[in-house]
Image (cartoon, rainbow, N blue to C red; front, top):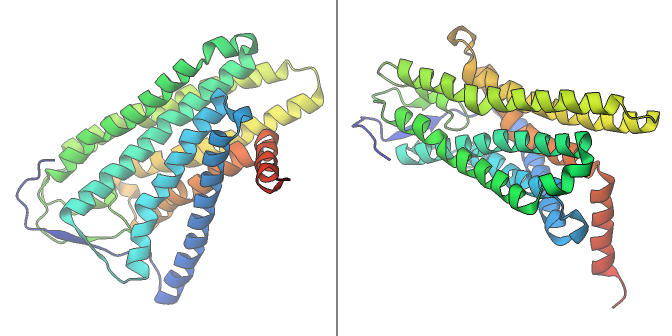
Length: 311
């Protein structure tokens, strides 16, 4: 990556707001959430890999979502632990650039993968007779590969443009990790171009997938309304509503962070929004998408019986 000459060699991260006692409480609270997130997603990743009954397209995509949700909060929360526990607030110029890119790459991959998962549910509910042929293993591999490839490629432009800006002081980032909007506040040159590129990029990585997701769920709801039994309708509505809540939390907070007008900028609010889509959403995803699913619970029981059954 090409960096311009700059007088800043490292940045100082302020971390969470509030007095030290409140910060310690918040760190412990978020540490518990982080541990729960890791355990949930590791469980889903392992189950979908080990149990043959879960070797179907929906759980193939969930396995990749779980992998993202293991890495995604790790890219930010571990930095918060270093700041709060080790009291080490500095991060190198290169380290900050790498952290920003990894965070954007994982977030972009999740955006696209959530749209792919909505497409999978659309095919399963709206055209069930063609599901097996439409969602073949080859197509699933192609869709997940495109999600990862797009996620890794699209943030490159944003990252390069951001880190070609001159940073000549101050070097204090009012955040708990190197997030792009917070970094742009420190640039000592015009940031119009990078902000314009970010807005255009968000149209593709945020608005396009969420438009596709809404379209898919509208079709799914229409198909659900045609279900004859009240119990079937209730279960399908419950699933769709839960999924949609996760989508709204993730996309809504991300769009507010990267597409809001400058007048809405507030370091405190930015931190809260970042916590929602970088820490809370990865914890909710396994609960909403997997752990409430009877097939996943049955798979867990099969694994337990296999491990502790007669020898």
